[in-house]
Image 1 (spheres, rainbow, N blue to C red):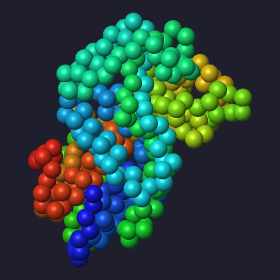
Image 2 (cartoon, rainbow, N blue to C red; image 1 turned 90 degrees about the vertical axis):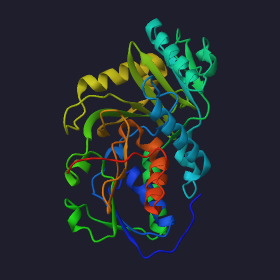
Image 3 (cartoon, rainbow, N blue to C red; image 1 turned 135 degrees about the vertical axis):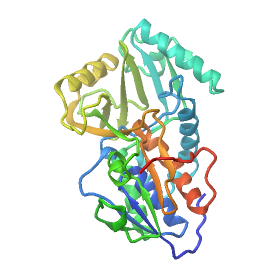
Length: 348
């Protein structure tokens, strides 16, 4: 849990998404005079699905990402939600299902890998007993009972409000670290991090997300996250108070954020293949965001020089890893880095 200490030191956090806000809140709780430099336009955090799903998003070869995700999920359960309204949590279980035989084989691969990491999951051949809204014929899956989903927009707004209560100040974005009047700087502005520190290996990866709104007479909103493999593609359905978030495609188109017909059609087809009743919901919103990805899918969290730290490159795991990132930066600021943070050697 955060421990307040008095200090006159100042901290500038560049970036007002979930990572920047989580870092700023944690630093303010430790007594830092904190200022967040953020843009008016919304970034990737506003488009995210909000899944906190290290098990169901895991894949062989990403053992370290799984470990960090599990540590951060525990922080969500143990205190990161303190100061946030309880309704930001929209689901408390994930169900991963397969549509065809090849998809079921992929699920077995993940299940065996998780067991090998000491996190066994129990595969089921009766997925519709867990989630009756699933399409006829979907039988194979596994449940991850400790995983959560949050309303991403509500979390961002609530973190900002908590920061204000802690005395965090707001300022416009910057394009040069030399312009920042602060003892210490944290770069937490996602895909724009390399503009402040050339050489940071962060690139934008586009992903479309849909919002479907419940209408009177429709089947109820699912009570858990449903992740599915549909003929080799992945789709997720995340509950919200008023409907479901559907996502997400993933491809590299530079900084293009225009939703593409093919991507939207694919998401709708796959979502309705998993839960046919979603076809009766209202099509409320379509948006595309840019995930800040790294080559190995691991975030860049640590110290760049005596004055500068980085918290960027979280890819698809920004909301999941926000608590761990905040704790890692707080530890670095105290001079006691966490064991899982790397020495970052990025040429400038």
